[in-house]
Amino acid sequence: MLNQEDLDQIATRFDQAWRSLAINRWSPLALLTLGTASNVMYAHMPLVAFAVISGLTLPRRRAIAAAMLIWLINQAAGFGLRGYPFTVTAFTWGALMGLGTLLVVTFASWRPGFAQTTWSGHGLWLAISLLVGFGLYQGLILLVHPLIADGHWMDWAIVVKLFGKQALWTGIMALAHGLLLWRQFTRIALSQTRL
Image 1 (cartoon, rainbow, N blue to C red):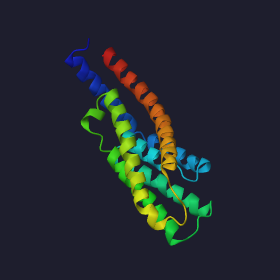
Image 2 (image 1 turned 45 degrees about the horizontal axis):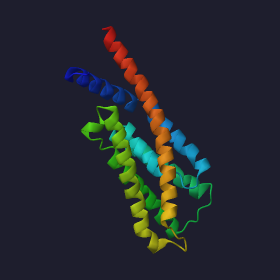
Image 3 (image 1 turned 90 degrees about the vertical axis):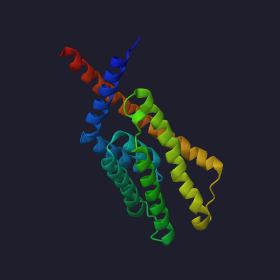
Image 4 (image 1 turned 180 degrees about the horizontal axis):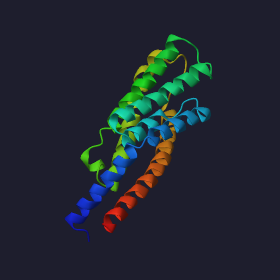
């Protein structure tokens, strides 16, 4: 059984491992690369997933910058490559997606104390961020949707499908980050036990 000193040491190692990954210059670049690549696969990329993972894995300013750059790349791809029309409605949808992305990344980057020191807390905050983030993002869209729908209809089956895509992308990126975090955590633990 672990005593309080062991738990404190694990919490410190976890925080050190998270911080070392968060300040790594490759972390936001990896998110931007993956976000750009996802534009090839999806016209409606999983912005909630990228906002949640950015907020969970990067310091707040970097997280907001990364998430908003991913949104901007998505908009550039939509208007520049996919031929989205240059209409008030299209720009309004884009602005709503940007606002939703900003809300999600800001919420996820809050990272309360319990999410900063343990694996279970980190995982719990991931789940909370995904659920609340999807609610914020999709709630904003559903709120405005009747006003600017242009004949499109969005029912709950579509919302559930959208959540599934966001959850899948979040899970895959969280797994990759978790593996990197575990590697860093192990390195820190080994270096401290050698002292």
